[in-house]
Structure formats: C-alpha cells, structure tokens
Image (cartoon, rainbow, N blue to C red; front, top):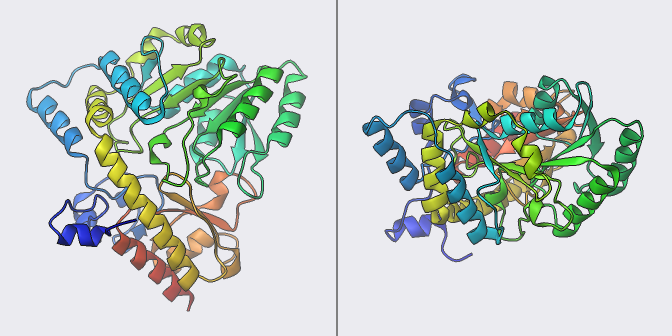
Length: 394
C-alpha cells in the first residue's frame, strides 16, 4: 500500500487521522463512548471513531458559532452539497429538489416506516442487524421480522422471497429496512444482490428503506452501490448522513432521497419533520460533503490498514476467534465461542480485560457468542486492546 502512516509522519507529512493517544481521549472526550465506563476501560463498542476532526468542518462550525449563526437550519445547500458529493464519488445523480433534510438517519427511517406500514405491521430486516433498527421499529409501534443473513453474511434472497410472500399474502403493508453497507458485519452488497432485492420487493409490494450512512467508508477492495442506482428501485428510498464517515454524530442532520416513484410519498411527510436537523449539523455536514473528500479518502486508507492489523492481531493472540474481515465501516464482527467465556462473552471480557465491546445479542437472536468491535481508533489502542484480551485469557 506504499508508505505506512508512521513513515509519512516521520517524513514530515500529515499526521494520521486515527492517531489520538488513549490518555488524550480520556482527558478530552466527554461523549457517551467515553463516559459510560470507568477510566480503566478501553471503549470499543459504540460507532464513534477516535479520530482527529476534518479541518474544513472545524472551521465551518467555528465561524458559524463565532458569528452567532446558531439559528434554525436551511437544508437546501446541505442537500446540494450531498448531491455533488455522491455524483463525484459514485456517479449517483440525485435530484436535490426531491430530497428532504431530517434530524438524523434514524428519525428519517422512523418517519418512512410510519408512512409505509400500519401500527403493529411488519418491518423485515436481515440479522445480525444494527441494534438501533430494532429500537426504532419498536418505537414506531411496528413489529420486527428477522431474516438471517447467509452463513457467508450475504443477503438471503431465497428466504427474503418467502418471508415477503408470507407477509404480503395477508394484505399487510410491509417494509424492508436495509443496511447498505451492512452493520455489524461490514458486508458490501453487490449491484446484483441489490437488483435481486429490488425485484423481490417490487413483486410483493414491499417498500425498501435503505440506511446508507456508512457508504463513504467502503474499503478499496469493494465497491459501494447506492440502492437507488440499481434498476427497479424506483419505489425505494435511501436515508443517509455524514455523521459516521466524518464522525459527526453530535452534529445532527440527514438526507432522505426518494426513488423516482417515491417522490410523492416523501411529500406526504408533515413539513414540520423537515425542520429537525440542527443548523450546526447542517453547517458541519455541508463542509464535510463539499470540502472533506480528501480527508475521508485518507481515513478509509487508515481503516483499511486497521482492519488488516486487527485480523493479524486476532490470528496471533486470539486463536479460535472467528473474525469477519469487514468490507466497509469501522466495525468488525467477531465470534468468540472458542474462548469459552459463557453466555455473555462481551460482558466477561469487560470484567476480565477492561475492554468494552458491543454484545452480539443486541444485534438479533442467535448471536450470543458474538461481539462487535470498533476498530476506528489508533493502531496503538487497537494493539493494546487485543493484547489486554489475550492476557486476560492466559
């Protein structure tokens, strides 16, 4: 891959984005990631990176706050910056006039699920799934219908066809909540898989809502395909944000993009909902999309290094642990069954090693031996965390 990050730094280049020391993070960060556990715990659970911020974002927010520009958000410029970014990155041409801004990805998902399903109605998702999917579906008063991924962590299209058919045969309006790329496994769905999903959804009248918040964080060995770029997705919708890729979860804003035949559906949302984005979130994310492309490309390179480092560390220090090498995101899915840690291995590792992982069961049933690890941190912290786990097992 050319020069390592350490070599670049020694040569006087830019410091790595993922280089913040553990002591500095503990001293300076006050988010839930750093506040939930005691100071002796290395937190590798929630989807928040330990990165230095994107300079254009910092400057945009600094200027806005310095000017007292802290009112209500104007979304159109934000949506246009997003449209320009996705056109340059993936050749996805979004009509900015048809998209709407919302507070964040999950609120956008919630609005759409309420729009397309009835109270108590089914929302299908592929498991293991992002744990917040279960929470948002239940908060909407809908019921979760789980369809496992294949053993290779791909969409199980045959099973989805069966479940779609069974649900819609009763006349219940049904939605499918897609994670694209998939969280927690890091799977990048192919264009062929997405087209097949679209065909199934269309055949059964299922509405697809695609969460694409990790889209910019696809590794160099894979290709991200926005759902709405695939043929047959005209009735689908995508919800996305710069929150994960630029580490801006505290600066809330998101975009909902409709397929060509879903524009009218999106207009049925109450206009008040589109005023939910934070103005500073819009300022920050506009700067990220407009001026942060080079930064996020550098970040992906560092994450690519980290995922391979993690794989090497697990192979060396945690024999028997099965790691799914992620194709995207900064999250890795681990099966810890071989460690014999009992019914809640993540909790036992927290007790023994003082490393906090996300426990597998929160991503759906059948994952009791699994855990999700956030490798969006410095290589030094990653090494210390895995070494701690290994030492605690000795």
